[in-house]
Length: 144
Ligand code: CO
Image 1 (cartoon, protein in one colour):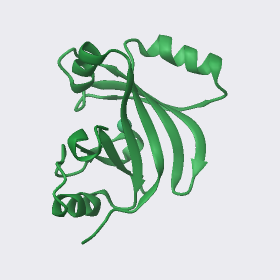
Image 2 (tube, protein in one colour):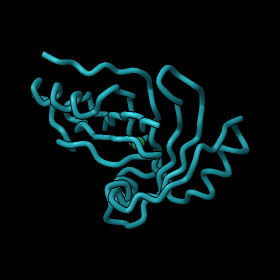
Image 3 (cartoon, protein in one colour):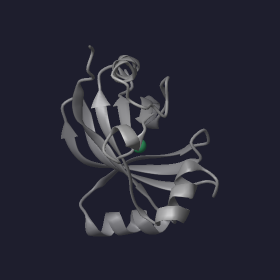
């Protein structure tokens, strides 16, 4: 059975109501670098990636997520749970292969095929019910 190789904690995703306010707080309180900001219409979020450290295979980050619409996944999360930790993302070498391995093990997948993530990465989500209650994202870094 193939098991995905986790290469690092790629980022922790944090749901926020107001990106500007949260970003200003992180910049004020932590010595942290803004890697970039993107609007992801498919996922219904505006996001900022903040670099915490370099790890093998890529940076280790904080991802601030503001919903574009109340009925988006992060919008729904905010209404139910308020601001806070939304998901944890791990680096993998090959996200499609990782999904096949997890599916073969019976894991419940949110995404059966990879989709577009920050900075040209390929990402996929695994349902919290298969990962101890934690919405889990797999990230394959963009090849430059
Ligand atoms: Co994420």
